[in-house]
Image 1 (cartoon, rainbow, N blue to C red):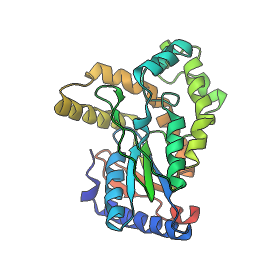
Image 2 (cartoon, rainbow, N blue to C red; image 1 turned 60 degrees about the horizontal axis):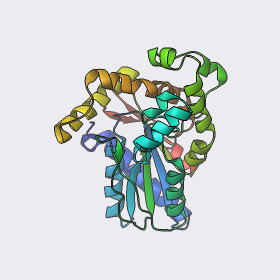
Image 3 (tube, rainbow, N blue to C red; image 1 turned 45 degrees about the horizontal axis):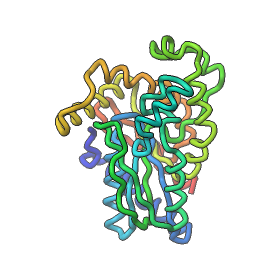
Length: 277
C-alpha cells in the first residue's frame, strides 16, 4: 500500500483538506458532516481515511471512517440475489451487493447528530463482522471503490467489456441491474457525501497489481485468501465501473489526487473543494 504519510505532496494535500473541512464545518454552523473518498481497489483509500481521522481527532473533532465494503450483504442474501436476479451477484463488490439502506441510514444519523454503530465486514470470511459500539460523530468519512460513479447509457452497457461479461452476462442482464441500482438508491447515497475526494489510479493493470498486494497481506495476517487465478476472476466485475470512473469523476470530484504506478500521490485540483463548499 502507498505510504501517503511519507509524501510531501500528500502532507500538503492533507493540510489543505483538513483546513477546508474545518471551514466547511464552521460555515455549516458546526453541524455534523460526511465526506467521501473514492478510488479503485488498492489505491490507498483506507490509508487516507485513517490519517484524516487522526488529524481531525487531534483538532478536537470526533471523526470516524467506514468503508462501503463494510456494508456488503452476507453470503445468504447475495445467494438470494443470485437466484432471483443473476448468478454474478453471488460475488460481493458491485452496486446491489451492499446493504445500501443501512449505509444511508448511518449517514443520515450522523447528519442528524445521532449516535451511530458502524459495521465491519470480514473479507477473509466473506461475512459481516462485529458492529462497533455506537458513537457520536462530528464527521464521518466514507471510502469506497465506486463512490460518485453514475449510471451508464444503454449504448455503453451493450458491448461486453471483458471475458466475464461476454460469457457470464452475454445478455447484459447483470450489468443492467447494477446500472439500475446506480441510478436509484446508490445515487441518493452519493448525494449525501460532501465533499468527494478521488484517488486517480493510472490504469487497470496497476489496480490489479495493487489489489494483489492487499490479498498477499490477507494471507500473511489470516493464513487464507484468494489464489492468483481466483483474484484475477474476482477483479473482472469491478472493471466496468472503475473504467467509467476515469470518464466521470474528473467532473464530479472536489479533490483529485493522481497516483503514479508506485502510488506516489500528486494533487491535481486543490481548489475545487472551496468552490463546492
